[in-house]
Figure 1 (cartoon, one colour):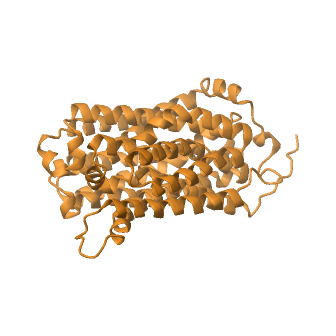
Figure 2 (cartoon, rainbow, N blue to C red):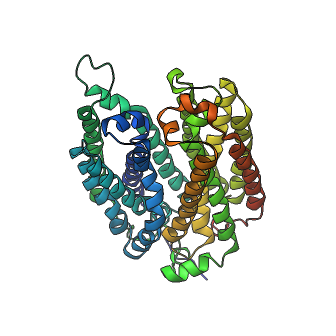
Figure 3 (tube, one colour):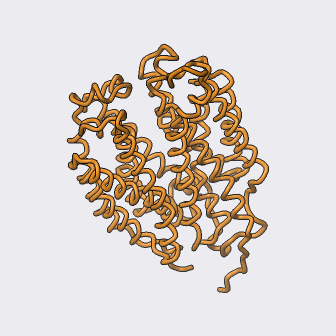
Length: 432
């Protein structure tokens, strides 16, 4: 049987750029309040729970909207599916700033932004499959994942400085409601501008597919769901992501408190530095490892490398108590985990083919969000992590008992190594 002729279009990089920017902005919207939690508690006259909820909303809402979002993306395409996410981002990013002094409106807007997230995130492998040849898809997914991490780091780094820039002279750096609202307005303008870029420049698909007709074929969404749960490699991957993403979400959520329990505090900038190194190394991993996967046409081997590579970092982060070994350990963990995410997304799309890509990715991320909610809740309840601990990690450090959970994560990481060896290499990437 002869293979059909297919063409690769340069415009794919334009689509990927505006899509990656939109992913970065939705992650910035998610983490906006993390660097100003203490200020927000005081300014909105509420408890730590209601401020932490602004970030937790993204995890909770994803559980309910992931599958509907994947259905719309698969049925109506990138322009409509991701376009819904872009419109929600623009409208409620703007409203969050316009009514930034009113907690109720801020909360409503934040939940609406949380609804936008699955319409954007669940299309990562869909964009790669529609526009990129198989030997560039892990790289395309990696670029989008990299943009997400950059968005998180940017928000952590600049949120408070932006707000402080709007303070009157002599305010001594303490935020007021006007500066908080001004910061949210800046993010609102970024949301609107990025969403407009996507709506103007994004396209559903190129005039001709970037692969053969056989590789471009898809089954229906419901058939795809049944096929996914009949595929052994997808079941194994769902378990791997359930463990891995849940673990990562929990560690990044509690990184300041884990650091505080070792004697490092935000006042000395050591706790923040540990998290920054983890994320920075993750960006490097997401930039390098997917390219290696595409060049070598290996998915399983690279996933195994990442699963094994993160364990020394996790062990060091659990047991070391001095700053340099902790920084090295957090960097190793971040590098290999964040590199594994886009490889896993692309592997899922390939082994579940011809199921729609948004459906397979939706299930993968859903597994990680569900486990993240479970792990974070267990750590908060049984690790003596009160809501006050989020507001003042220094005072809570003596009572925090998170080390047993970290040891449990090491055991689960070893289980992931065993499971990754049981995966089969993607036939789709091998045959290209």
